[in-house]
Length: 265
Image 1 (cartoon, one colour):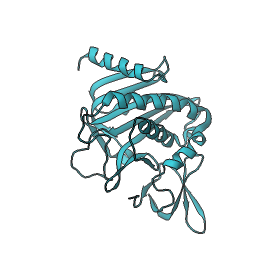
Image 2: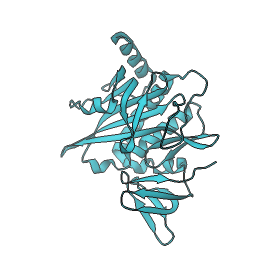
Image 3: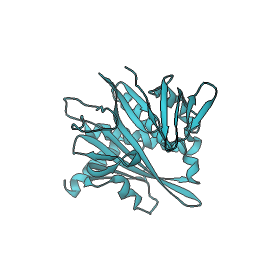
Image 4: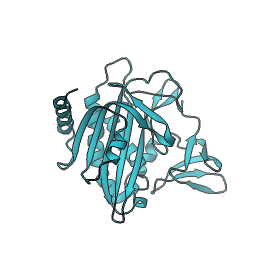
């Protein structure tokens, strides 16, 4: 892909994403190691969306890799500046998940759900598979926090391999429409992030709970030091997962635990 091709594709994305502010940069590259790493290196404070057609060293939660081949995956990152300290951004990954799931549903894809704290899921013939994920990395100062929001979505079924969860894709047997999905995701996040900046996750909590894959199910949450079992109540206004453990409600914080449970058939 030439520089002119990349510029044309970036302009097409902007044209199809009317919620993107005029001061945002929208860039496309043919290949990179990690869009998150690329944007973490930028210090100019300019909001930027970087899409990569191929990503060779992408990262998922807990250091898992996310490799993207041209046309098979949508991989991109946003760098956005928020006022205040990082602790004001509690629940950001969940809010991003809501925006993405709703955008894909609006594009005609069914069976979308969210798995706490940062997995985008889709119903398959065997239950639910992981469609994508969100990885957020923060850089803070006393006055502001720069958030790099990394997104990976399977457009086509991933190649056979060992995955932490069963997998799912948007397209199966048809040519993936990269531009349409990329523009829909970008537009949804451009619209959602100002709402999050003003109101926090509380503006998204009810919508997240409607998409909660494990709502009302007996689940096990594995932390670094202990495991908890209980009924999945949902996420609270700060994005913490609430578990009904019988004699008490446990509040599980993002980043410290992972959810392991049977999924809906």
